[in-house]
Image (tube, rainbow, N blue to C red; front, side, top):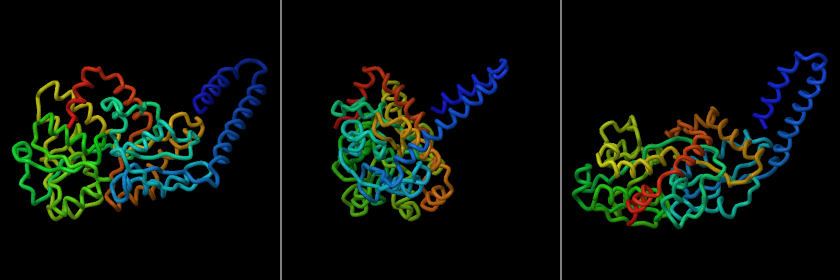
Length: 356
């Protein structure tokens, strides 16, 4: 609608030079403006007095939960009609349950959007059990891109990358298609690390507690932003060893921690690593089901974008040391369209790299 309106205005401007057209065009512009206002009012009427569910694919207390609840406190005022945003935890399937539900069974009415593992975008490419098409979801955007890290508890004998390759280590995960399991298996199979993966934890909050209790040595694939926001004391008290970081560029906080892309020169391994590291552009992603009415989809996308600039939202995230570096929904959709063209030969090797 907005693009069409701009095109009509441009045509109108070019026609004003023709004799007798000024009054006709003035009426056309007025009619178009009225139509746009009615269109916007229709979205407001739909959302007014309603609840919009913000689905969270992890248990309470983790990083995804923290970001989603913070977003929900600020985004409603930017959706026409100012609906009430209601967070709802839907953990399961390694953080993929919400994406699966949205793609296959959720109502397409615009009354729900949610967040899930950043791996949800590429999971159907390497996991044959994930039969949904993530490129068809209605992508609102991501609150930030990210750096995921591999860490161990300070009492673990594994304290460096060299130790990681030479000594046995027990790490926690959430499920076969979850990012923690995927990156753990990636470290194990690409680099030959001696890892025992204990999977099935509901979320990162439970894994971090297990580390503190001595049940696990550590975790791979967790966001550095989650550690800063939820376990700042770990950093201050030097209670963790940061072994490696998965990203294309180092986090400024971690200048001496190696990037996994720097730890091999094997071209085939680098292709595999690139596929999974690209998922970090989808950190803290938000999407709605496919096929929702275009006016409601546009309203949700615009509201998400506006919230990323909202002073209250930014103040709250800064207070809790939550990183905000938004990635637009269009960029996410475009990246997925590109990733879906990855040759099958590379995808087959990627699948093998994350198998247990």
